[in-house]
Amino acid sequence: MKLLKTKAIVIKKTRISEGDAIVTVFTESSGKLRFWAKGLYFFRNKYHGMFESGACVFLTYSERGTQGLCFFNSCEIVDPFKGIWGELQRMFAAFYFLELVDSWLKESDANPSVFHLLHGSLSLLEGAGSYETLVRVFELRMLALTGYSPKLDACVLCGKGPGKSCLCFNFEKGGIICSHCSDGKAAGPKVSPGALAFAAKGIAISGRHIERLKIPRGLAQEVEILSHHFLVSRLGKKLKSYRFLEL
Amino acid sequence: MSSHPTAFRNLMEELKKLPGIGPKAAERLAFYLIRDGGESVERLARALLALKEKIRCCSVCCSIGESDPCGICSDPNRDQGVICVVEDPQDLFAIERASEFKGVYHVLMGAITPLEGIGPESLKIAELLARTEKNPPREIILATNPTMEGEATAVYLARKLKGRGLKITRIARGLPIGANLEYADEITLMKSFQGRTEL
Ligand SMILES: [Zn+2]
Ligand SMILES: [Zn+2]
Image (cartoon, rainbow over all chains, first blue to last red; front, side, top):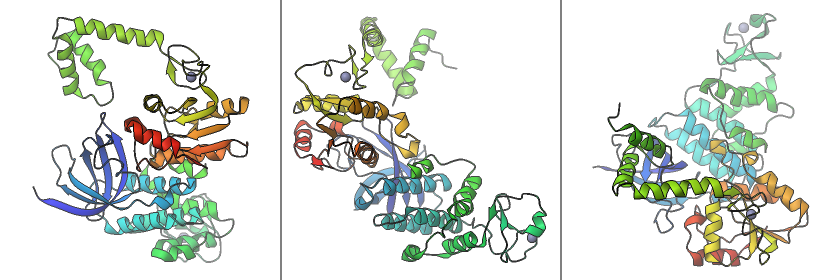
């Protein structure tokens, strides 16, 4: 069987017996995949403790078998992202990123850009001052990189630019609707030009530049509508780890 | 539809509900149990009934025991001034095997696990806070697993317990990342206790 090698970030492990686990990882080259790690929970296992959520590893595996599980061959740690540990909000943000990747992408949906987004965001988390901006940008970039960017530069119905007035964000249409088109009817929650400008920057930004972004004062909830709530509406379910960001 | 006899099938169904037991394993276990004409079945049935009748949750430490408070909580030779906080009863028994620790325990019954939606309210954290408020100990040792979930739980607890003038310590990093206390050998466990650091 052909051995494949790739960088991967551990999403989670599920214990299936005294010693064994099913490990879910997000790989750089082949997207999300799962494999059976035999004896992982035993202290003397070579890989014991290697598959911690959020750790970046270098994985050798072979293609899927009948149950959709890959065959694990070997693994070494590339970066455990230990800088995230010990700080509650950093850890919770990391869990949220992982759950989002796990829920948003189907198995073997390869997307190296999302891998780099996740890797980069975990690395930024290690020294993060403001988790909120990082979380919002992660969501917006995730939408953009998978082809679901919200349409924010013009009304989705008439195509007119947003101007300076407040607009509605329509989840179903995935974009803004001008006051003329909504015609007094609530087409969705109201969003101001400041929130739209931040979201547009978040969608387009890359790498270290994220640190220069800041959510405008008083607009956190509106930005959350354009990123998190839009994502959840597309996903069709809530993410379990999200409420932990508030703890 | 399975062609096993009804009683056999019922047993298999019950076994299948246990963690890590699939249909094949359930069938294998059921065959194993009937191989000696039922003696194993009787012993197992008696053990299961005793479990139901005699084992209870300790209202002090939330662990399991044959009495309430449990044997450890009611032992006058244990130091009530030092509370070791662990995730599961298995961790408590692992630490007891290493027999270095002479204080008492608090079992959280899990760890904060955001990916499964398990938050502080699902764990025995309120019980720990109430217990330490009523009888403030000299030291609280946070011995949750060195996994990200265990670490998040320890940091959360340290934050909640802060400002009460209690000494809060975390077991040492001698344990590798991601380790499971339950499976740690006695020497490693002993060292991680001796090397605990104040938070
Ligand atoms: Zn319009
Ligand atoms: Zn007790």
